[in-house]
Image 1 (tube, rainbow, N blue to C red):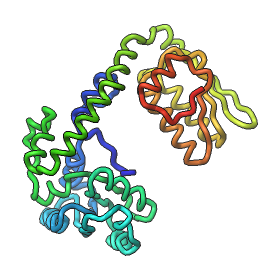
Image 2: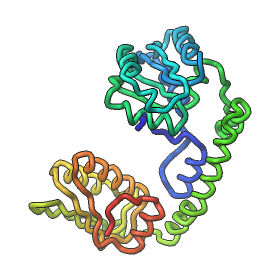
Image 3: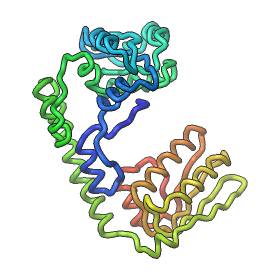
Image 4: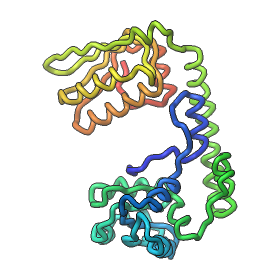
Length: 302
């Protein structure tokens, strides 16, 4: 996956506020790229992969005209084939020979992520990011929305006027977002509102680690949210160092929030990368419901 994962969209910010997820503001790929471009503390060599014909070259020329934090390392216009067609050894070698620090991919969201997943382990650049319209903005082929539209969540409307081919995608994405809002976001927000943790459960939250020959078990007690998660972080970190399967006994858990779920997902991925497993056992029904409404479907919950 892309090394740069951002809350690039006001709907993400609005939903996070509904669910008490601590995302303060929208951060776009263009914002990150421009900040790196204008800083002078370090020098980034940037390679552009994708975009319309001629735009990668124009982006390199635009970067090369400034003496700031970036240098153009090269570009490839791979055409409009499949991600597999664009993953040849010749193309990957060309990117690696550029000795770039960052590869900016612009192939469309789904194809771009597919291409990165196929080639991430073969590309030597430390950072690979699918940054959407960055290549167009840098090249000057597309103008970015005025600041007031960006802050008001209307940049999509400007983009649709600038690039008419995006209208169909925005309609599709908008309908999908409305469906998610109705089926998941609103029910989860209501569930959170109706199951606010008691202060005594937050104060009494604790964990107990029990080690066996086959696994580590963590018995979890009380209510957990973003404010009291430090013991959870420490316990999860300690269990990772044990290099064994992990079982969380959730029988005495009264409440969790999105921050706790986020730690579960990070832990599950870390263990999975080492062919280890995470299981949640004795999980109360309301905790199961919270996980289901959070669309956390791949965790082992019993």
